[in-house]
Image (cartoon, rainbow, N blue to C red; front, top):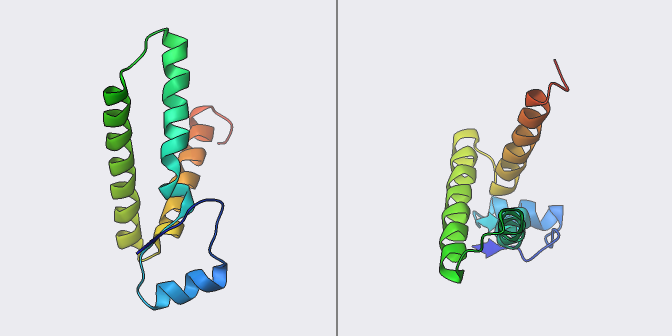
Length: 106
């Protein structure tokens, strides 16, 4: 298993080789989501002028990361694609849904 650090450290060629060898690669956009998530939590707390304890932040982060990984893993298995492609599928579907809800597409 390889968990990417940040900013696409594997080349597409390396990614393909590892996939052929059956190595599970957790893509950077999934493995590094924790920092972005906690930044969002900070923003929410500032807006609400209500602050969570470190334990509350860690519990919320754990729940979010575990849920996200399970969702991506399910897409990967359902569609027979890598975790990277599954993460892209999930991300693109979220953007498409947001556009649809805003009435920006038919």
